[in-house]
Amino acid sequence: MRFLLYLGVLASLCPAQLLEVGVHGGQHRFSRAALGSSSPRPGAANEYSLDGGFRLGFRMTTNSDTYWGHEFGYAYNRTRLVFDLTGERQGMATHQGMYNYLAYATREGKRVRPFATAGVHFSNFVQPGASATQGGGSTKFGVNYGGGLKIRISPMFLIRFDVRQYDTPKPFPLFNRSGWIRQMEYSAGFSFFL
Image 1 (cartoon, helix red, strand yellow):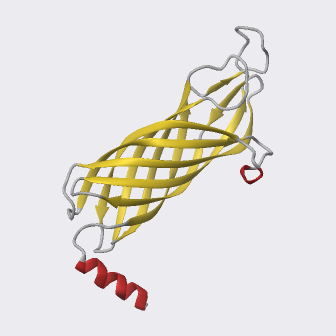
Image 2 (cartoon, helix red, strand yellow):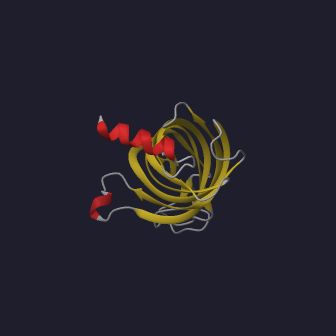
Image 3 (cartoon, one colour):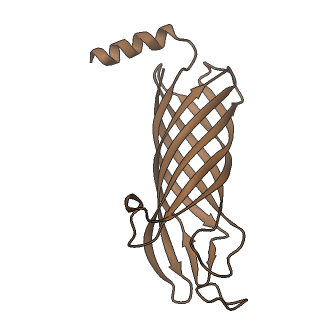
């Protein structure tokens, strides 16, 4: 209880947002999710693709100026590997770590703050039956961009809504793969800030 009291006093003495830490959850979807084929024959039919699912994560934001901020985050995405020839789906995970730059449409201290964001990320696609902690998965680096809305609901708490697109090279050593996959995030979160 004392800790919350100290944080409240600190927050009232610091008019600018120093730090925001929060959790978020939502959905993610893939487009251009065809991954490739196990056959080296040119023009072989695609055999594998990805399907979206739920997303859970956390974000930490610090604002360096009245209209600008920096954000670091992690997200766990429940994904499905689809065998296109049979329609069979197997659950797998995608882990993401990211850094984003934020540009706010309203100044620091406003109750409602729309923002645009862009940054870089890595995605670790962990195949069914593999484990990221045992070195499994295929890690790819990409770019992401989007926007959102932060709404202060008390002197120390806010809710936020995000829509972001993650562009990532295709994972796994398959034949006839080219281009990048696109992953859309639709999430809502709850944050504590100072």
